[in-house]
Image 1 (tube, rainbow, N blue to C red):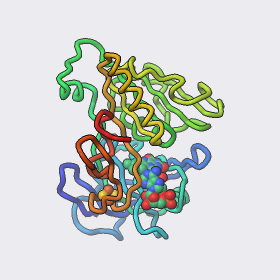
Image 2: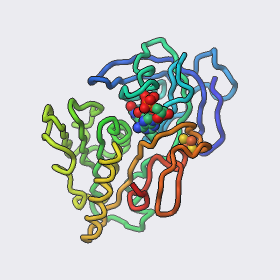
Image 3: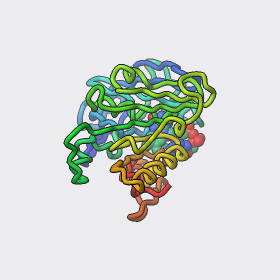
Image 4: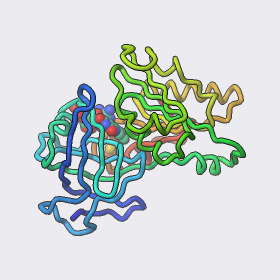
Length: 281
Ligand SMILES: Cc1cc2nc3c(=O)[nH]c(=O)nc-3n(C[C@H](O)[C@H](O)[C@H](O)COP(=O)(O)OP(=O)(O)OC[C@H]3O[C@@H](n4cnc5c(N)ncnc54)[C@H](O)[C@@H]3O)c2cc1C
Ligand code: FES
């Protein structure tokens, strides 16, 4: 059983079992975790980890672990019985997660955070009713491809273009080729797709909505490209999912503060998705 919170997005804090783990690119692991809590962590409450929404994340920690706090990891895919994460081995916390194997346990807190607004909802919110097609671009950089790839499954087939930029071997694009109107991959070393980086292939003015997640320099570029397009008369709007450093993941430590034109916000509970026109990068 899991301990649950009572916020609008119910959150679990419990241990779950690893169902599988596979290295899908050098240093990048696809880890599938069960949604049924292991009995040793029974604390009362619901019997399953709440279903996450695309764009949300969990704080994950291997069991046992040498690190004190969980690490924020986005949902890549989820179904009734499992949640899949893509994890890039970086420091100690993610190295422990990447070393987990089927049958091992991990501590999980979540799902946490807000979500990408659907294009139709974002258009209605902005009082921008679209009579024709809404032109949507999804942009993922490196491990930031995970949440946008998950989000793409909420969109109608053929209703979005997908841009994915990597240093080298691409990953996290299962099912995208068949569903996107256009999939454009860039790699810095030219090992797949177009050799180069996102600016070589991306035109913000061609879209009504841009959804992006990736390293801060890439998000800064996307924000700038949107601002330039808007200045030239384009209606384009952007939503950026930030990968801020985090500690508590619960809104308490202010370790994930993000500057916006409306003041400081906490990435963990006010984000991770922010309107590109509001966030200061
Ligand atoms: C909302 C969100 C979603 C994320 N989704 C993914 C994902 O799907 N897959 C993935 O591989 N990585 C993801 N990250 C990045 C991942 O959380 C960091 O790489 C990880 O925390 C690094 O921890 P570490 O112990 O391995 O490295 P260390 O560098 O040793 O970490 C030390 C401390 O810094 C924090 N930290 C370091 N780098 C980051 C970072 N980029 N973002 C946040 N905290 C950091 C850690 O939480 C830890 O407290 C996400 C980050 C955020 C904020
Ligand atoms: S990580 Fe502590 S307030 Fe966000």
